[in-house]
Amino acid sequence: MKKVIGIAGNIGAGKGTITRYLIEKYGAEAVAYTNILKDVLDRLYLPNERQNLAGLAEALRNAFGKDILSRVLEQDIQKKEAELVVFDGIRKKAELDYFKNKIDDFIFVFVEAPLEVSYERLIKRGEKTDDNSKTFAEFKKDHQRPADKDVPLLKQYADFVIDNGGELEETYRQINEMMAKISGK
Image 1 (cartoon, helix red, strand yellow):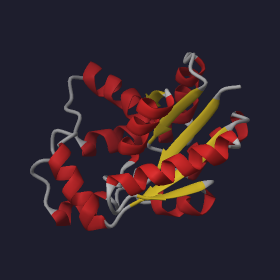
Image 2: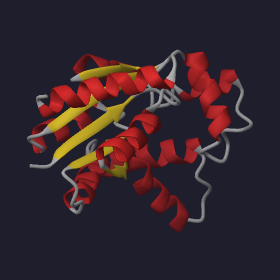
Image 3: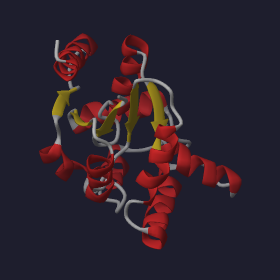
């Protein structure tokens, strides 16, 4: 039976780090909410800036239901052949509830890191076109956008919480412990 791990956390907390580790160490395949949004923005010839991604996500939720992105992502998950599929970017309770109710072997992980650490990571990776020039004040403001403001509330529903505020080896240790519990070893 396919196991699905969904990851939530604030911007720059380390969702991608956990996803990459699960791919490299455990052979997971990944899908992403962001890919859905980037596909639409690319088709509209709009930049993949955080503001555009967040605005599009909210517009889609308002037009087609709070779980629209999860419904699309579930279709992507079903196409994967791996026994372990991972995705990050759960931002709303309705998105989380969709997967908890739809996929029997769903594991919800919340990753956290101090805001200052997350900001430094965001600037270094420059994933979105506007990340490199973002100030700390703008970064904090990003967390108050409708697309991101509810993320901290999701922690209480997590099956596992990963503290990614320290050394990478410590994060990997926590992931390995989580995977041992999931597999029953």
